[in-house]
Length: 112
Length: 511
Image 1 (tube, rainbow over the protein chains, first blue to last red):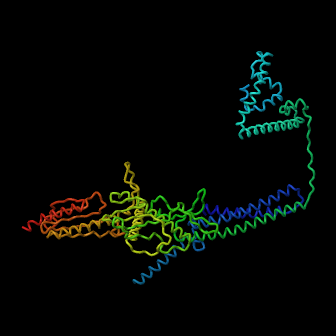
Image 2 (image 1 turned 90 degrees about the vertical axis):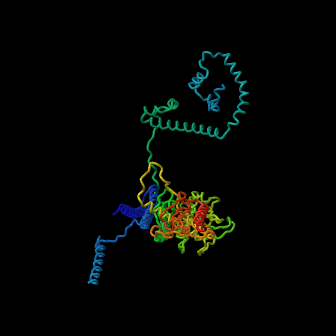
């Protein structure tokens, strides 16, 4: 895996983790227990801050899709041709060789 | 007194003098008057009397002098000084207060920072301090709930607006990338742009990859418009102009034909962005074409090619002229191609530029020549665009003139016969442009009855190192024994020579 895909995956992970944790923060600070005013004020601020962080993570996710598209357009992404379940590397070449051999068989038969 | 007045704080002096302590006043007086030894009662009285007399004058003087100084700068300076003083005062008071407070705990260290005034008036350690427990704020659950609800509502609203914004953003992204993909599918060269001001996708619409070395590399940016569609923006503005050729005769009096075609697609793309890219590319091609023609025209001034008034004028002789201009594309361009002479001419020019691009590309592919210590040939010579065309046109005109005059000679001189062959065979593989890229060569064979024959080679008229007519004279009818070899630069010279040679071979016959 290239460095680029690792960074992109990390970005996705970070963003989802942020979304989760910040939402948990909001829910946690939503409850009103017997606290003094300063603690309450701090919690209200925390809610606000967590919202901003969530928005930023969402924008980050959008950026990931954008850079993926850009890489695709510029041909920096190679679609996986030889998947392991298809037989891995060399499978297509083997098939091609089989076909070529078939045709030469055909030619042999014709000439024979 | 007068030199004391020069100091910055004149206004403060009078009031300060009253407030200053003796310890401050005495050194100042010493600084002004030196020692007290010379001071007597009489001198002081005299001085005071003078001072009173002067003060009236001074007041008048001051009024006159200080009025122009009432500039905003001075006002601000005074205000600033005032503020600085006030701040100093405040900080001194604060230092005194803190020192006094600490003095109850650490009398020795605190007394060093106390002002002498405080020390004398208030005993050290007379101010005490103690912690006071904060009053218990009454727990008001209503307020807390209100705040929470408010903040949660805000958070909800923000997330909602953000979601809708991101949704439209995603839709815009989709249309943008679909547009980009459709452009990329047509084979356009896209690349990443990472400048400080622009980030995004760049497009290379110029002919750099095709071998062009024009100054404008033809680079643009694909931007996302407000609605999400792809906006094409060339880096350098390309003028929508095209090369127009006008063919005139009778010293430019009569216009024979005007070209009305310009480079365009036979089927313009329906996508507006793609159409804009193509249009800019064609405009760039036309710009380069005219630039190269003008560059080449400077070399051809000896061939009656002039560059003036934004047009290249080629004088073909016999009153015929070709005017090449770079003009605006008309509002309603013609879509059909009329095979007029001017249209064909301009078409040939375009083909020649494309061919020159190809040649340059070939040159770029080959390994470079070794560096020369002495200046080698011009690294950026003008491209052959006008020259091949001109060579053929002028050559053909020259040959037809030669044919005409030789025909006239053959009518008066019996036994004189001639034959002109133009070399039309071309090496097909060397050039896709046929004989246009090959230098024109014509061979002229003249027979002077049985006495002799001559072979005249007429090369390209643009070759200055060769004579216009390369004549070789042979004895008899075969081309074995060379009797003479010469070259002529003018048709008249050739005519003279042919007449002379014909006359020489004729008299014997008449005898």
